[in-house]
Length: 58
Image 1 (cartoon, rainbow, N blue to C red):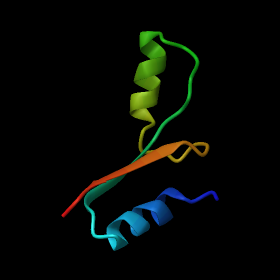
Image 2 (image 1 turned 135 degrees about the vertical axis):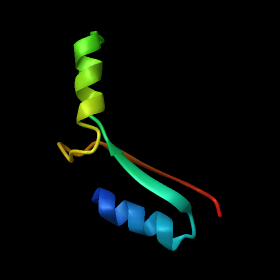
Image 3 (image 1 turned 180 degrees about the vertical axis):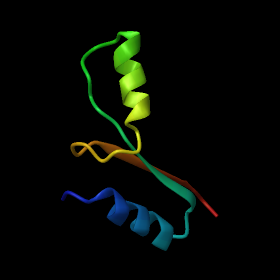
């Protein structure tokens, strides 16, 4: 099942987790400094379907 980042965050928050955040990432096959910098700059931009959601137990 595919979930949007906002939906996944809502599920985490509904489960009682705190400090819930989502981070988008690009799976660039390059290890050059410029590629890593590009990924850092675009971490809040919903490009593609790759993201991670994290939270802490209350």
